[in-house]
Structures are given as C-alpha cells and as structure tokens.
Image 1 (cartoon, rainbow over the protein chains, first blue to last red):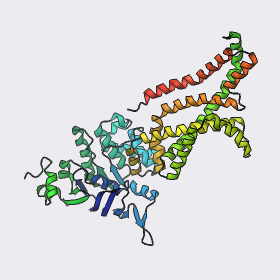
Image 2 (image 1 turned 30 degrees about the horizontal axis):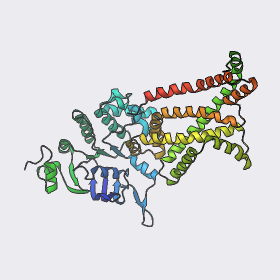
Image 3 (image 1 turned 135 degrees about the vertical axis):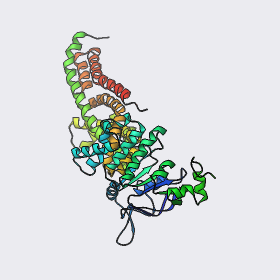
Image 4 (image 1 turned 90 degrees about the horizontal axis):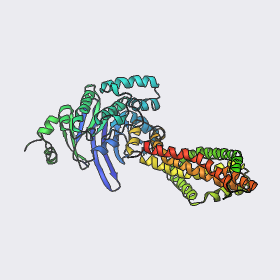
Length: 256
Length: 217
C-alpha cells in the first residue's frame, strides 16, 4: 500500500531524513516511535508531499507521489492538480487537529467531499452523520470546533479524513496536544479503524497503543530507521543500543 | 461668528444632495477598493515572486503619494493620453486605488494571521490552493480584519472631500458653494460637518462593535 525508498529531506543545510526505506502493506498498522527531532513527523508530511522532498521515492497503492519519471527518463515534479488528486486518497490527522473553526462539525466533514469530489451536499451530510456516529459524536454535528474538547475535536478531524475514503491514514502525534484523560477516546477510535481494516502509519509516544494495536513498530533516530519489528519482540528484546536507550525512558520499557 | 439658523436650515437641502454624492463615491470606491485589496492581498502572499513584487510596488507607490496628487494626475493626465472619463469615474478610480493599497496590507495581515495548519489541512484533503484560499483561509482572514477594514472605510469617506477640486458636487463642494452664495461661513459649514458625521459615526460605531466581537486573542 505504501512504499518508501531511499527518502531524503533537508531544510536548507539541515538534513532531516537521511534515506528512509519503509513499506506498509494493506491493512497493516505501523507505529513510528523515536526521540523528538528524529524526523518522524517530517516523514509523514513527505508521504503526501505537503513537505516536498528532493531525493527518493514514495508510492501509495502503486502510484508515485511528488515525482514521476518522464518518457525520457527524467525526474519530473508532479503538477499541483495531480498532487491534489493523490492527496484525496491519503488521510492525515494532525497534532493540532486543524479543524476549520468557521465551519460547524458537519461543515468540516462535508467541505472536501462537496467541493473537491463534487458530491451533493445532502448525500455528503447523510454520510457525515454515519461517520460521526462511528466516532461517537452524533450529537455534535451542528456544534463548532471551538465548543468541543480536544478529544472531541481530534475525533472530528479523524472523521473529516474518513469522509474522503482514504486508502491510507497518517497520524501525526494525534494525542500529544490532549489532556491525559482525553487520550483514550481518540485511541479507541483508532483501534476501531484498525478493526475495520484501515492501513495506518502512526507517529506516537503512546507505547501502550503501540503494544496493543501495532502490527509493527519502527524506531527512528536522526533521520534513519534504527530498528523495526513486532511490538512484542521489539519492546521485550530490542537489538540496538539506541532502541534500548529510547525505550528505557518510558515506564514499562525493558528494565535492565 | 456668523452662525444663523435661517441660513443653516436653508442650505440643508443642497448639502443633502452633496452628501448623497459623497455617499455614492464612498460606497463605489469602497467596493472597488475591497476588490483590489483582496486581489492585492492574495498577490502579496503568492508563491510567485512576480506577483508579490508587483503588489509591493503598487502599495509602496500609493502609500508614498498624496491622494490629491493622484486625483489631479488622473483627472488632467488621462485625457492627454486619449482617455476621457467622467469626473465621477476618475474620482472613484483614484479613491479605489488608494483605498485598495491600504486594504491590500490589511488583507495580507489577515491571511498571515490564519494558522498555517489550516492550509495544510485543506491541502491534505485534496483542495487546490485556490479553493483552500477561497473556502478556508479568506473567510477566516476577512472576519479577523473586519474592524480595520471598517476603520479604513471611514478614512475613505473623509478622503472623498478631496474630489471637490475636480468638477464634482460632493458635500464639501456644496458647502463651499453655499458659503459663497450666502456670504456666510459658519451656517453652511455646520451643516457640512453634521452630514460628514452622519456618514462616519455609524462606521465608527461599527468598528468598535467589530473590535469587541472579533478580538484576536
């Protein structure tokens, strides 16, 4: 579903990603962990080309993102129109929710389906109510984002993504801005998505979620993938010193 | 002081006609000024350097020149290049160009005050830059700058007084005419002041209300 090969990204002289190779298969939930500044969030933003990358390759469901190869073998940057089309299939949920504050909850949900996909507003509203029920916010359809708790806002953000029927969903530290008591409701929605077979790439500091929901855990540090494996193996028996150092900072990590 | 109630009341009807002209000039140039300002603001934040540069030159030029100079330049200059416009059109053009430059800067600051995450979220849903601007960024930006925009329109109303130097019978012109005709200064000008306040005070009140309503925290 997702294939990343030799991805490099730098801001000016600062190198953030130094050659990432990662693949995620259909229905798989991969959790990305690592110290802050290791490039996890940047990696997510490169997958839908919100952050343009210079070198390497990203494919989603077989389709290249950002760059294509022209008939003469030259690397060509995709048009904005082509990128807009590809982004519809890649949902991303942000740490800061980024709901549209001037639109109601249902307005947030139907905005892109109506104005990007050209759906009839009534049909989009009906679909939105179904998806809101799924994230447990049916009664908030007409509320505005400013009236919701952080946990509710983040569930609306997830619902907004789901409206586009994405093939792949990216989660960028979606619980980091939440009060601790609100984290659970968001993680519960994400676990539900896993049950439904959604392909997910999740950047998080919630080791509990990684243990319970991840099919694979990937540790990044300094722009590189250090180690990856099934959560049971990786948490119980990390091979790399950097993995052990990182995990030891979380309670429940290997007590050596 | 030569104030006389009789003259004051006598001149009110002609002043009212002048106030109506002033109001039309103000509304007309406010509409075009807003149009220029939104396009200018979009150009100021554009990713195309040429657009950014053009908008910057426009704003700098207008802000650096007196409106009276622009007005006279257009009024006497345009016919010399073969463009004969009625005085009203020249007045609206000059006022709108000036107002547009200030509105450009207000709109730009509004757009820049919207969190970058809004554009990211919109683009991640597959919205084009133009669609995201129109549906997501501008509605939030305009809402935040309603107060300064209204404030700018007060300046615009007052600036219309300058058009009395070209052949337009606006409120000030009507006052000057009445002064000459009646050989009396205070009575007609009390009326002129009154009518300007009738035009500006509601806008002032609106600015204050908008400031309280959409205060940026």
